[in-house]
Length: 93
Image 1 (cartoon, rainbow, N blue to C red):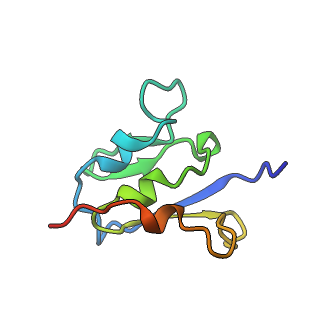
Image 2 (tube, one colour):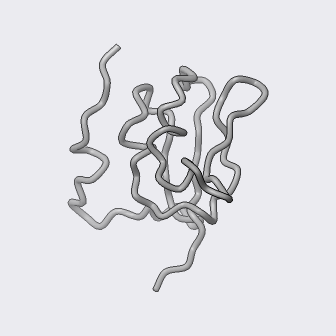
């Protein structure tokens, strides 16, 4: 079993502060150790990356495409042809 911690990158330049990542993350809502927290600067921040279950919901629902979830070594979590993040609907501005 792979116990690597997820590496979650949030591009502050692209983020539109919609809070969607915080809302869709199953490990953030009502969690003792949430993956995301809301920063004082009005942007989400990664509070507990070890809580991430790599469901890719945050990446898939980010309307600004500001979030990327990878493994610590940067190799990514998806197997070749894994469509999870690519097939979920993205909101249109």
